[in-house]
Length: 431
Image (cartoon, rainbow, N blue to C red; front, side):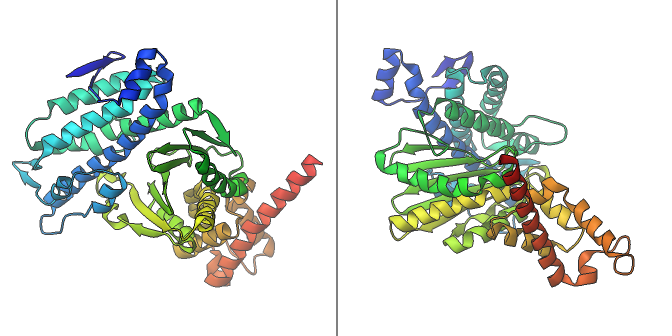
Protein backbone atom coordinates (compact mmCIF):
# COMPACT_ATOMS: atom_id res chain seq x y z
CA UNK A 1 0.00 0.00 0.00
CA UNK A 2 1.26 3.50 -0.75
CA UNK A 3 0.54 6.95 0.53
CA UNK A 4 0.62 10.11 -1.54
CA UNK A 5 3.00 12.79 -0.34
CA UNK A 6 3.36 15.90 -2.48
CA UNK A 7 1.94 14.01 -5.47
CA UNK A 8 4.67 11.37 -5.22
CA UNK A 9 3.50 7.86 -4.35
CA UNK A 10 5.72 6.49 -1.59
CA UNK A 11 5.64 3.14 0.21
CA UNK A 12 3.95 3.43 3.61
CA UNK A 13 6.44 3.84 6.43
CA UNK A 14 5.48 2.44 9.83
CA UNK A 15 5.80 5.29 12.34
CA UNK A 16 6.09 5.13 16.14
CA UNK A 17 3.03 5.98 18.18
CA UNK A 18 4.69 9.15 19.45
CA UNK A 19 5.18 10.31 15.86
CA UNK A 20 1.55 9.57 15.03
CA UNK A 21 0.41 11.56 18.07
CA UNK A 22 2.43 14.60 17.06
CA UNK A 23 1.01 14.38 13.54
CA UNK A 24 -2.55 14.32 14.87
CA UNK A 25 -1.83 17.43 16.96
CA UNK A 26 -0.88 19.24 13.76
CA UNK A 27 2.69 20.16 14.80
CA UNK A 28 4.23 18.42 11.81
CA UNK A 29 7.41 20.46 12.09
CA UNK A 30 8.16 18.50 15.28
CA UNK A 31 8.37 15.37 13.15
CA UNK A 32 11.13 16.71 10.92
CA UNK A 33 14.08 15.86 13.20
CA UNK A 34 12.88 12.27 13.43
CA UNK A 35 12.27 12.08 9.70
CA UNK A 36 15.70 13.55 8.99
CA UNK A 37 17.34 10.97 11.26
CA UNK A 38 15.53 8.22 9.38
CA UNK A 39 16.46 9.81 6.05
CA UNK A 40 20.17 10.03 6.90
CA UNK A 41 20.16 6.39 8.01
CA UNK A 42 18.41 5.48 4.75
CA UNK A 43 21.17 7.31 2.87
CA UNK A 44 23.80 5.06 4.47
CA UNK A 45 21.80 1.96 3.54
CA UNK A 46 21.25 3.10 -0.06
CA UNK A 47 24.99 3.55 -0.54
CA UNK A 48 25.49 0.02 0.76
CA UNK A 49 22.85 -1.43 -1.59
CA UNK A 50 24.43 0.28 -4.60
CA UNK A 51 27.81 -1.08 -3.53
CA UNK A 52 26.31 -4.59 -3.46
CA UNK A 53 25.07 -4.16 -7.03
CA UNK A 54 28.46 -2.89 -8.17
CA UNK A 55 30.20 -5.78 -6.44
CA UNK A 56 27.79 -8.23 -8.08
CA UNK A 57 28.63 -6.88 -11.54
CA UNK A 58 32.35 -6.93 -10.81
CA UNK A 59 32.16 -10.58 -9.74
CA UNK A 60 30.03 -11.53 -12.75
CA UNK A 61 32.53 -9.87 -15.10
CA UNK A 62 35.44 -11.64 -13.39
CA UNK A 63 34.03 -14.84 -11.86
CA UNK A 64 37.48 -16.30 -11.17
CA UNK A 65 38.22 -13.58 -8.61
CA UNK A 66 36.76 -13.57 -5.13
CA UNK A 67 33.67 -11.47 -4.48
CA UNK A 68 34.16 -8.27 -2.50
CA UNK A 69 33.63 -8.56 1.25
CA UNK A 70 31.16 -5.86 2.31
CA UNK A 71 30.70 -6.99 5.91
CA UNK A 72 32.35 -3.84 7.33
CA UNK A 73 30.03 -1.63 5.30
CA UNK A 74 27.05 -3.73 6.42
CA UNK A 75 27.99 -3.11 10.06
CA UNK A 76 28.68 0.60 9.54
CA UNK A 77 25.27 1.10 7.91
CA UNK A 78 23.55 -0.81 10.76
CA UNK A 79 21.90 -3.19 8.29
CA UNK A 80 20.79 -6.55 9.65
CA UNK A 81 20.61 -8.45 6.36
CA UNK A 82 23.31 -11.14 6.10
CA UNK A 83 21.83 -12.27 2.78
CA UNK A 84 23.29 -9.12 1.18
CA UNK A 85 26.80 -10.51 1.71
CA UNK A 86 25.99 -13.55 -0.45
CA UNK A 87 24.60 -11.59 -3.40
CA UNK A 88 27.89 -10.61 -5.13
CA UNK A 89 29.32 -14.15 -5.01
CA UNK A 90 26.10 -15.68 -6.37
CA UNK A 91 25.78 -13.28 -9.32
CA UNK A 92 26.49 -14.21 -12.93
CA UNK A 93 26.00 -12.96 -16.47
CA UNK A 94 23.18 -14.76 -18.30
CA UNK A 95 22.35 -13.80 -21.90
CA UNK A 96 24.03 -10.43 -21.41
CA UNK A 97 22.08 -9.61 -18.25
CA UNK A 98 23.19 -9.70 -14.63
CA UNK A 99 21.53 -12.45 -12.61
CA UNK A 100 21.44 -11.45 -8.93
CA UNK A 101 19.87 -13.88 -6.43
CA UNK A 102 17.40 -12.01 -4.24
CA UNK A 103 17.43 -8.95 -6.47
CA UNK A 104 13.73 -8.26 -5.85
CA UNK A 105 14.38 -7.95 -2.11
CA UNK A 106 17.15 -5.44 -2.78
CA UNK A 107 14.94 -3.45 -5.14
CA UNK A 108 12.24 -3.28 -2.47
CA UNK A 109 14.76 -1.86 -0.03
CA UNK A 110 15.95 0.70 -2.58
CA UNK A 111 12.36 1.91 -2.99
CA UNK A 112 11.65 2.01 0.73
CA UNK A 113 14.81 3.92 1.60
CA UNK A 114 14.40 6.35 -1.29
CA UNK A 115 10.95 7.08 0.16
CA UNK A 116 12.47 7.56 3.62
CA UNK A 117 15.03 10.01 2.23
CA UNK A 118 12.37 11.96 0.33
CA UNK A 119 9.84 12.19 3.16
CA UNK A 120 11.22 15.12 5.21
CA UNK A 121 11.96 17.13 2.06
CA UNK A 122 8.55 16.61 0.49
CA UNK A 123 6.64 17.10 3.73
CA UNK A 124 8.45 20.39 4.36
CA UNK A 125 8.42 21.46 0.68
CA UNK A 126 12.18 21.89 0.97
CA UNK A 127 13.43 21.88 -2.63
CA UNK A 128 10.45 19.66 -3.46
CA UNK A 129 9.70 21.27 -6.83
CA UNK A 130 13.08 20.29 -8.27
CA UNK A 131 13.18 16.86 -6.64
CA UNK A 132 9.61 15.54 -6.85
CA UNK A 133 9.64 14.59 -10.53
CA UNK A 134 13.01 12.86 -10.23
CA UNK A 135 11.88 10.89 -7.18
CA UNK A 136 8.76 9.77 -9.03
CA UNK A 137 10.84 8.72 -12.05
CA UNK A 138 13.23 6.52 -10.08
CA UNK A 139 10.48 4.97 -7.97
CA UNK A 140 8.74 4.02 -11.21
CA UNK A 141 12.00 2.65 -12.61
CA UNK A 142 12.51 0.47 -9.53
CA UNK A 143 8.90 -0.69 -9.73
CA UNK A 144 9.54 -1.86 -13.30
CA UNK A 145 12.35 -4.20 -12.25
CA UNK A 146 11.07 -7.74 -11.85
CA UNK A 147 12.67 -11.08 -11.14
CA UNK A 148 16.35 -11.66 -10.52
CA UNK A 149 17.78 -10.09 -13.68
CA UNK A 150 18.92 -6.56 -14.44
CA UNK A 151 20.53 -5.28 -17.62
CA UNK A 152 23.92 -3.59 -17.58
CA UNK A 153 22.30 -0.35 -18.75
CA UNK A 154 19.75 -0.47 -15.92
CA UNK A 155 22.46 -1.15 -13.35
CA UNK A 156 24.56 1.74 -14.65
CA UNK A 157 21.50 3.99 -14.50
CA UNK A 158 21.22 3.14 -10.82
CA UNK A 159 24.89 3.35 -9.81
CA UNK A 160 26.73 5.86 -11.97
CA UNK A 161 27.85 9.18 -10.54
CA UNK A 162 27.76 12.57 -12.20
CA UNK A 163 29.15 12.67 -15.72
CA UNK A 164 29.97 15.25 -18.35
CA UNK A 165 26.61 14.73 -20.06
CA UNK A 166 24.75 15.65 -16.84
CA UNK A 167 22.67 12.47 -17.07
CA UNK A 168 20.59 11.79 -14.00
CA UNK A 169 20.92 8.52 -12.12
CA UNK A 170 19.53 6.97 -8.98
CA UNK A 171 22.90 7.52 -7.29
CA UNK A 172 23.00 11.19 -8.30
CA UNK A 173 19.48 11.67 -6.93
CA UNK A 174 20.53 10.11 -3.61
CA UNK A 175 23.48 12.52 -3.42
CA UNK A 176 21.22 15.49 -4.18
CA UNK A 177 18.72 14.37 -1.55
CA UNK A 178 21.56 14.05 0.95
CA UNK A 179 22.71 17.60 0.28
CA UNK A 180 19.14 18.92 0.60
CA UNK A 181 18.70 17.03 3.88
CA UNK A 182 21.83 18.66 5.29
CA UNK A 183 20.48 22.08 4.35
CA UNK A 184 17.12 21.28 5.91
CA UNK A 185 18.75 20.00 9.09
CA UNK A 186 20.74 23.22 9.42
CA UNK A 187 17.64 25.36 8.90
CA UNK A 188 15.65 23.72 11.71
CA UNK A 189 18.31 23.09 14.30
CA UNK A 190 17.14 24.28 17.68
CA UNK A 191 20.54 25.47 18.89
CA UNK A 192 24.11 26.16 17.91
CA UNK A 193 27.09 24.96 19.92
CA UNK A 194 30.30 26.71 18.88
CA UNK A 195 28.93 26.93 15.33
CA UNK A 196 27.48 23.40 15.06
CA UNK A 197 23.76 23.06 14.32
CA UNK A 198 22.36 20.65 16.91
CA UNK A 199 19.02 19.21 17.94
CA UNK A 200 17.62 16.57 20.30
CA UNK A 201 20.89 16.17 22.18
CA UNK A 202 21.18 15.02 25.77
CA UNK A 203 23.08 17.22 28.27
CA UNK A 204 26.07 14.88 28.29
CA UNK A 205 26.35 15.16 24.48
CA UNK A 206 27.27 18.83 24.59
CA UNK A 207 30.86 18.16 25.64
CA UNK A 208 31.31 15.92 22.59
CA UNK A 209 30.20 18.71 20.27
CA UNK A 210 32.41 21.23 22.08
CA UNK A 211 35.46 18.95 21.70
CA UNK A 212 34.92 18.41 17.98
CA UNK A 213 34.22 22.08 17.29
CA UNK A 214 37.27 23.13 19.31
CA UNK A 215 39.45 21.31 16.81
CA UNK A 216 37.41 22.37 13.79
CA UNK A 217 37.39 26.05 14.74
CA UNK A 218 41.10 26.05 15.52
CA UNK A 219 41.97 25.38 11.89
CA UNK A 220 38.80 26.47 10.04
CA UNK A 221 40.29 29.88 9.24
CA UNK A 222 42.70 28.10 6.87
CA UNK A 223 39.93 27.55 4.32
CA UNK A 224 39.61 31.35 3.92
CA UNK A 225 36.45 32.10 1.90
CA UNK A 226 36.07 28.57 0.52
CA UNK A 227 32.65 27.01 1.31
CA UNK A 228 32.43 24.04 3.64
CA UNK A 229 32.85 22.83 7.23
CA UNK A 230 29.18 23.25 8.21
CA UNK A 231 28.49 20.80 11.04
CA UNK A 232 25.19 19.19 12.09
CA UNK A 233 24.77 17.00 15.18
CA UNK A 234 21.86 14.98 16.59
CA UNK A 235 21.24 11.92 18.72
CA UNK A 236 19.83 8.66 17.35
CA UNK A 237 19.19 6.13 20.11
CA UNK A 238 22.50 5.30 21.76
CA UNK A 239 24.54 7.15 19.14
CA UNK A 240 25.45 10.77 18.60
CA UNK A 241 25.60 11.46 14.86
CA UNK A 242 27.84 14.24 13.57
CA UNK A 243 28.18 15.24 9.93
CA UNK A 244 30.53 17.75 8.41
CA UNK A 245 29.99 19.30 4.98
CA UNK A 246 33.53 19.33 3.64
CA UNK A 247 32.75 21.32 0.50
CA UNK A 248 30.79 21.36 -2.73
CA UNK A 249 31.59 17.84 -3.98
CA UNK A 250 28.64 15.45 -3.63
CA UNK A 251 30.82 12.40 -3.07
CA UNK A 252 33.00 14.06 -0.44
CA UNK A 253 31.25 13.16 2.80
CA UNK A 254 32.38 12.67 6.39
CA UNK A 255 30.07 11.26 9.07
CA UNK A 256 31.01 10.51 12.69
CA UNK A 257 29.13 8.21 15.08
CA UNK A 258 29.89 8.35 18.80
CA UNK A 259 28.68 5.54 21.01
CA UNK A 260 30.06 5.19 24.53
CA UNK A 261 33.89 5.41 24.17
CA UNK A 262 33.95 4.42 20.49
CA UNK A 263 34.14 6.87 17.60
CA UNK A 264 33.33 5.57 14.11
CA UNK A 265 34.18 7.77 11.13
CA UNK A 266 32.78 7.02 7.67
CA UNK A 267 34.47 8.84 4.82
CA UNK A 268 34.04 8.86 1.05
CA UNK A 269 36.17 10.64 -1.53
CA UNK A 270 36.42 10.72 -5.31
CA UNK A 271 40.22 10.94 -5.02
CA UNK A 272 41.95 7.86 -3.65
CA UNK A 273 45.13 9.82 -2.90
CA UNK A 274 43.22 12.35 -0.79
CA UNK A 275 41.59 9.46 1.06
CA UNK A 276 45.04 8.10 1.88
CA UNK A 277 46.10 11.61 2.92
CA UNK A 278 43.34 11.67 5.55
CA UNK A 279 44.38 8.21 6.70
CA UNK A 280 47.89 9.56 7.29
CA UNK A 281 46.57 12.55 9.26
CA UNK A 282 44.36 10.36 11.46
CA UNK A 283 46.95 7.65 12.11
CA UNK A 284 48.39 9.39 15.22
CA UNK A 285 44.87 9.38 16.71
CA UNK A 286 44.73 5.58 16.53
CA UNK A 287 42.40 5.18 13.53
CA UNK A 288 41.73 1.56 12.59
CA UNK A 289 40.37 1.43 9.02
CA UNK A 290 38.21 -1.33 7.52
CA UNK A 291 36.62 -1.89 4.14
CA UNK A 292 38.76 0.58 2.21
CA UNK A 293 40.27 -1.75 -0.38
CA UNK A 294 36.98 -3.48 -1.04
CA UNK A 295 35.37 -0.19 -2.02
CA UNK A 296 38.00 0.97 -4.49
CA UNK A 297 36.57 0.19 -7.93
CA UNK A 298 37.69 2.81 -10.43
CA UNK A 299 36.31 0.77 -13.33
CA UNK A 300 32.80 0.97 -11.90
CA UNK A 301 30.47 3.93 -12.11
CA UNK A 302 31.95 4.89 -15.49
CA UNK A 303 35.26 5.79 -13.90
CA UNK A 304 33.68 8.08 -11.31
CA UNK A 305 33.66 5.59 -8.45
CA UNK A 306 34.65 6.91 -5.04
CA UNK A 307 36.67 5.40 -2.26
CA UNK A 308 34.80 4.66 0.95
CA UNK A 309 36.09 3.46 4.28
CA UNK A 310 35.31 3.32 7.97
CA UNK A 311 37.72 4.17 10.79
CA UNK A 312 37.20 3.19 14.44
CA UNK A 313 38.79 4.96 17.39
CA UNK A 314 38.63 3.10 20.71
CA UNK A 315 39.05 5.64 23.52
CA UNK A 316 40.15 4.68 27.02
CA UNK A 317 38.21 7.40 28.84
CA UNK A 318 36.35 10.67 28.36
CA UNK A 319 39.59 12.67 28.15
CA UNK A 320 40.81 10.45 25.29
CA UNK A 321 37.39 10.70 23.64
CA UNK A 322 37.50 14.52 23.70
CA UNK A 323 41.07 14.51 22.38
CA UNK A 324 40.11 12.19 19.51
CA UNK A 325 37.13 14.31 18.48
CA UNK A 326 39.20 17.50 18.68
CA UNK A 327 41.94 15.90 16.60
CA UNK A 328 39.52 14.74 13.90
CA UNK A 329 37.88 18.16 13.76
CA UNK A 330 41.22 19.96 13.38
CA UNK A 331 42.24 17.94 10.31
CA UNK A 332 39.17 18.30 8.09
CA UNK A 333 40.05 21.73 6.67
CA UNK A 334 43.16 20.30 5.00
CA UNK A 335 40.96 18.21 2.68
CA UNK A 336 39.55 21.34 1.02
CA UNK A 337 41.15 22.03 -2.38
CA UNK A 338 43.76 19.38 -1.55
CA UNK A 339 43.81 17.86 -5.03
CA UNK A 340 44.31 21.26 -6.68
CA UNK A 341 47.30 21.94 -4.43
CA UNK A 342 48.74 18.48 -5.13
CA UNK A 343 48.53 18.97 -8.88
CA UNK A 344 50.24 22.35 -8.70
CA UNK A 345 53.09 20.96 -6.63
CA UNK A 346 53.71 18.32 -9.33
CA UNK A 347 55.35 21.05 -11.42
CA UNK A 348 58.26 20.98 -8.96
CA UNK A 349 58.48 17.51 -7.39
CA UNK A 350 57.18 13.99 -7.99
CA UNK A 351 53.86 12.63 -6.66
CA UNK A 352 55.29 11.15 -3.48
CA UNK A 353 57.10 14.34 -2.52
CA UNK A 354 54.08 16.53 -3.37
CA UNK A 355 51.90 14.54 -0.96
CA UNK A 356 54.66 14.62 1.68
CA UNK A 357 54.69 18.43 1.42
CA UNK A 358 50.93 18.57 1.99
CA UNK A 359 51.14 16.14 4.92
CA UNK A 360 53.85 18.18 6.65
CA UNK A 361 51.99 21.44 6.01
CA UNK A 362 48.81 19.96 7.50
CA UNK A 363 50.58 18.49 10.52
CA UNK A 364 52.07 21.96 11.13
CA UNK A 365 48.50 23.32 10.89
CA UNK A 366 49.54 25.64 8.07
CA UNK A 367 47.95 23.88 5.11
CA UNK A 368 48.04 24.89 1.47
CA UNK A 369 45.23 27.39 0.99
CA UNK A 370 47.30 30.50 1.81
CA UNK A 371 49.81 29.49 -0.86
CA UNK A 372 47.06 28.85 -3.44
CA UNK A 373 45.36 32.12 -2.52
CA UNK A 374 48.61 34.06 -2.96
CA UNK A 375 49.27 32.72 -6.46
CA UNK A 376 50.41 29.13 -6.11
CA UNK A 377 53.05 27.87 -8.49
CA UNK A 378 53.50 31.28 -10.15
CA UNK A 379 55.26 32.48 -7.00
CA UNK A 380 57.75 29.63 -7.08
CA UNK A 381 58.40 30.10 -10.79
CA UNK A 382 59.12 33.76 -10.12
CA UNK A 383 61.55 32.83 -7.35
CA UNK A 384 63.31 30.36 -9.61
CA UNK A 385 63.59 33.01 -12.31
CA UNK A 386 65.04 35.53 -9.86
CA UNK A 387 67.85 33.14 -8.91
CA UNK A 388 69.28 33.48 -12.40
CA UNK A 389 69.85 31.61 -15.60
CA UNK A 390 72.99 29.99 -14.28
CA UNK A 391 70.96 27.86 -11.88
CA UNK A 392 67.55 27.26 -13.45
CA UNK A 393 66.53 26.97 -17.08
CA UNK A 394 63.02 27.06 -18.53
CA UNK A 395 61.36 23.70 -17.94
CA UNK A 396 63.61 22.66 -15.05
CA UNK A 397 61.94 21.01 -12.08
CA UNK A 398 62.93 22.07 -8.62
CA UNK A 399 63.86 18.55 -7.50
CA UNK A 400 66.08 18.08 -10.56
CA UNK A 401 68.30 20.94 -9.36
CA UNK A 402 68.02 20.79 -5.58
CA UNK A 403 67.34 17.08 -5.12
CA UNK A 404 64.09 15.60 -3.83
CA UNK A 405 64.72 16.14 -0.11
CA UNK A 406 65.83 19.77 -0.39
CA UNK A 407 63.05 20.59 -2.90
CA UNK A 408 60.47 19.13 -0.52
CA UNK A 409 61.82 21.10 2.45
CA UNK A 410 61.85 24.29 0.37
CA UNK A 411 58.20 23.83 -0.64
CA UNK A 412 57.17 23.16 2.96
CA UNK A 413 58.91 26.39 3.99
CA UNK A 414 57.05 28.21 1.20
CA UNK A 415 53.64 27.00 2.41
CA UNK A 416 54.47 27.95 6.01
CA UNK A 417 55.80 31.34 4.94
CA UNK A 418 52.71 32.30 2.98
CA UNK A 419 50.44 31.45 5.90
CA UNK A 420 52.62 33.64 8.16
CA UNK A 421 52.52 36.43 5.58
CA UNK A 422 48.73 36.21 5.35
CA UNK A 423 48.38 36.28 9.14
CA UNK A 424 50.60 39.37 9.37
CA UNK A 425 48.56 41.10 6.67
CA UNK A 426 45.32 40.30 8.50
CA UNK A 427 46.79 41.59 11.78
CA UNK A 428 47.78 44.91 10.18
CA UNK A 429 44.36 45.21 8.56
CA UNK A 430 42.50 44.80 11.87
CA UNK A 431 44.59 47.37 13.79
